Length: 381
Image (cartoon, rainbow, N blue to C red; front, side, top):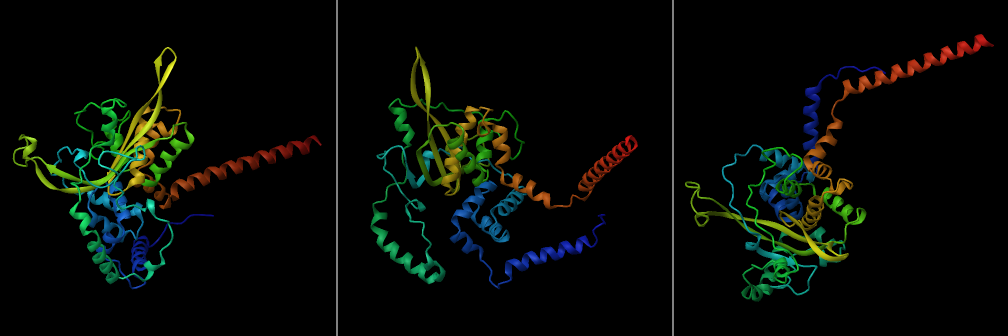
């Protein structure tokens, strides 16, 4: 079988792009981006987190363009992000300042400030709701009106939305070591390539923009396959963090002169991992290590998985893939992994032809050797 040059490449590509749009609009129905933003909250949050770009409107456009494919949407968002100028760096934000919308602990029933269940699928039956097939905008508005009347009295008694950290409660009891502030300027993996051994700031950045499914699988492997004890959610909180920038005219001014520019919805998870520590004279005690995760939007599974992997990479045992930072950090990036797998669809004519030539030469050499062997055998007879 011989290979010939592909003809009409440009025209074929243009027609392929037209077909792509045809597949998106062939039913004569077009999704409006505001409806994607309103009704696909989970997908919006996932795409923003993995693309490191917080903008629900842009995420909705990317999802529409990618026809709901999250990997392609993340690719589009990352590409657009690379064109944006970086005008400011935000000042440090303390998660304690988070305006809470959901806050739970799997470690303690009674926590300071109480458990706030918020919006979650955790308490649903996971049964298909066929009423959604015929749901209309008018139905949604009627339900909203009734809900607002019902919850009005709750809003009047609504607390400030700021709650203390659960782990601070453990530290006050002396059950956990106090954490010292680290004022080292963090590395920026979007401006400088990842290097090994990596810093913790690099690891957390890669984890927070890693693919949700990949991180979940690796975190599951940590628990199930590589000897880690069962981690517990010390605190999971979802809320809005204020974002401020330094005085754009005089950046040397005090923090109090910062400008508030908005807020972002984030999910934060602090995982408690029990470890056995030798105290001397053969005595062992159980202490708790922390794994930390934070990401854009309401993305609870990813934040928890991130916390598990953060602790796993801090321990760093090359014997286990889940504790090997090169293995984990190089393989969880959505754009890198999807891009490399997808590139296999691109033309590999030259390289594959060279492999075929090698196979043909090998086969031909074997045939020549076999014929020589048969000739020698015939002479002996």
